[in-house]
Image (cartoon, rainbow, N blue to C red; front, side, top):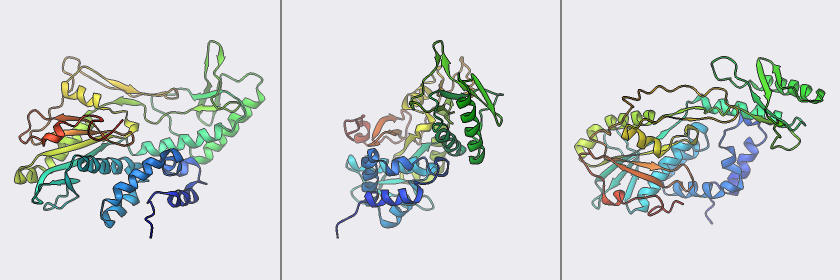
Length: 354
């Protein structure tokens, strides 16, 4: 019997049947990746990686990979295994070493551990996903209003706004529709159900909607705030502490492959800045964000991260398909150097990432 791809046409059809009729607030943010044609290569890659695992391991990934909270951790774990195989390593997923199961164990020619590789994903706060789904639902309602203006929320108080529940969102959309359709000139401000909307304008008048004759909502992104690598560094430190005993007993290199969920805005340059102790700070925000949070830094003593001695280095995993290694950062103070092939890894040279 011909092998059917795990995430091929049959999967897409079933996923659409199960979730396609739900409002955007009621389905995972990964829905488009699961069904849209432009993501077909992405889904094919996922299926190919799962085919390399045993049935139980693959089933575990299939249960988690389309959930918002676990999608990117699954991607980065699979991408790390792919990267290690691509340079010729023999690897085992979650091999048991006493009570511990590193994500990937690299084996030597005798089948003994030659290196341990753990994977960490820098993730936004868990509530972020629900908030984004909520704003998406209101966006879908507003774009049905046949007035080609751009609406945004006005800042109120010192806390970011929370998305309305589905019923409240429908009432808000009805109010906005009534106010916009009954006014010969779009009102500058519309207050409804505790939210204040503004019609975005410049010196030439209201901005035109990218939805043509229908309204556009510049919703809060749900991800506005400082971009900070310290959370990732602390997670790497915790992994080193967790695996310290088997690192010492086996006396092999320990590498952490790190990647960032796109919502965090974190990049390798942020990690490099932290390693160098540079006087830098970064924020991310969109047009619809009314609050971007705060960030405190002592310019005389900016934060700096020193890799722990048991850590041999970091692999930075790209969050763009095909999810290759975007950079390698070795630990100059490591007790155990990584294999030479990892030292030579550079973007595009070995793993074919564009």
